[in-house]
Length: 207
Ligand code: SF4
Image 1 (cartoon, rainbow, N blue to C red):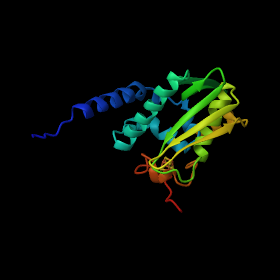
Image 2 (tube, rainbow, N blue to C red; image 1 turned 90 degrees about the vertical axis):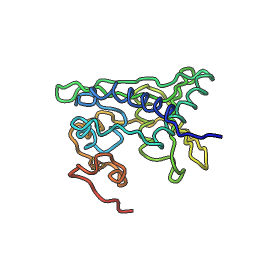
Image 3 (cartoon, protein in one colour; image 1 turned 60 degrees about the horizontal axis):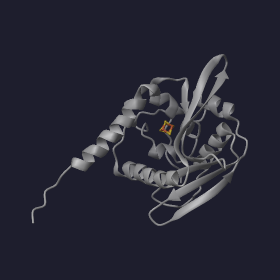
Image 4 (cartoon, rainbow, N blue to C red; image 1 turned 90 degrees about the horizontal axis):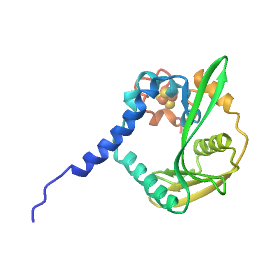
């Protein structure tokens, strides 16, 4: 028996990941485009992605694993009548300038008006996470839906949470982001931030 190492499949995964990144990299330099995930995160990431967008590219096993879990569950939900990877966007004017909030929900049940967000994680501890709830609430606000489901797939557990609509002041989150008023937004963010080596606001995690 002869065993040789190969990278044929890894190359396919890499080219898919790279293509997805390249499709968005130009848009990342635009300040008037604000992603839903940015409204739920440190505002300085929004500033730094405009200048250092190439730093965002990542080809790490945990990222690939997460996107495979997404794809797999989205396939299953699509077969059950859900729409997958649905783009959502909303325009908001701030002081005479037009901003477009953009996002993409993992899955959507149009008939029952339910948004599904899929999360893969190393651990189920602390779920549902506040930033994931906020992200789902923002989608509910943008779509005018009343109910969302947050699904967690972790190595030892599968969990889902039903999240009911709570009004969200989208404009306020947008102002916080474009004016860079929340850096960081969460106490743990800097530790995992791709910009933490160049960021002047980085704080050390306290717990
Ligand atoms: S290092 Fe912290 S403050 Fe700086 S961009 Fe990242 S999360 Fe924000």
